[in-house]
Length: 79
Image (cartoon, rainbow, N blue to C red):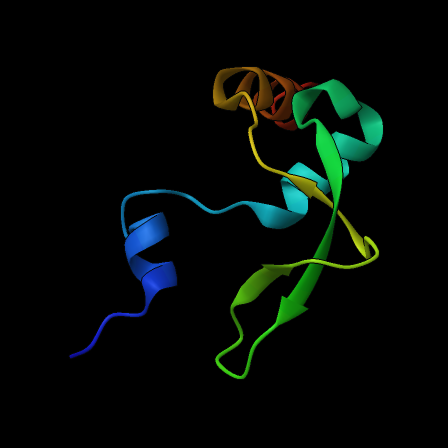
């Protein structure tokens, strides 16, 4: 079967994708995922594309996985 570029990028099956948890973590501690304003469009295949134009989203391009999991697991396992 043909693989979509998003499947190759995230290597589904080995890399956990915890989008909602990262969003909540960012709201509590923005240093976990610094953002920058960008103009994003979703194409007909459902993939996000960066375009020139007025920013319509705040995008996290580089997060600290270790810091995120310490943050996340600390809250998940707290009594």
